Image 1 (spheres, helix red, strand yellow):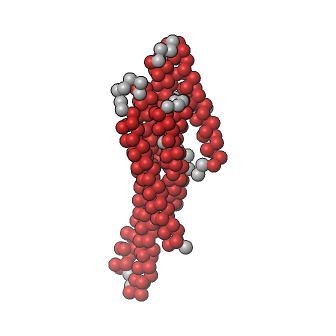
Image 2: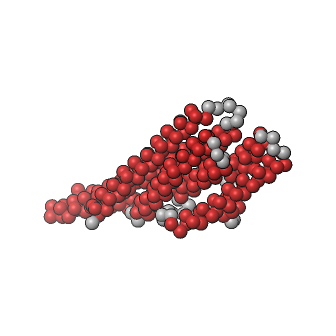
Image 3: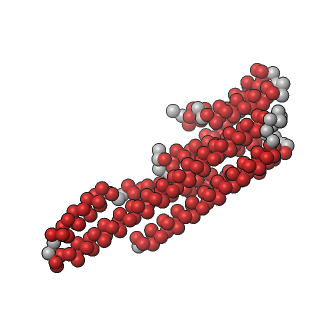
Length: 250
């Protein structure tokens, strides 16, 4: 399946197209023309996403294809692209300006998510090289052997057990680091998707007065800043943990 077809199936693209068509119809555009606007936005979103991902493919950090982090990153990227396209399509005015101001925060969150995804893939690759079951079996075997060992062999067995304990501790730390990163990626991605959904709602209802744009935008900006800071915090904690592990391995 081509990348363009995949993007056409993206639910955010369909939602943006439907919203654009609805907004056009709401301002008395002929239904046929409104439908054309919706289709044009849908196709433009798909094409822009393909072009953007091709560009990202040349510079993005290495992320294991098909992994959990890869899936979260793709979802976040789709929502962020939808946000950017919707913001660009809103033209001018107070609402458009406020939404545009969130663009750098979304971009920064996405850049951090990319780095977190690379960290998750790095820890995943490291974990794949360590056989947890084998280490546990070896520990069990040596623990039993120590009970029956002659006195002159006990020190050697103790050193082997200490080595196994160290390797098991490495696995625990790496697994904890990866779980923390994936949890933060999940919450960050869903928050960006929520942001897009709320902005779509604002763009569709701002003319009706159903919502108070200023209050909602303040809330969205605060939430987005919290997501951005949380991602940076997780990145720093993870980097520090990996740096400590690297120093211990040397």
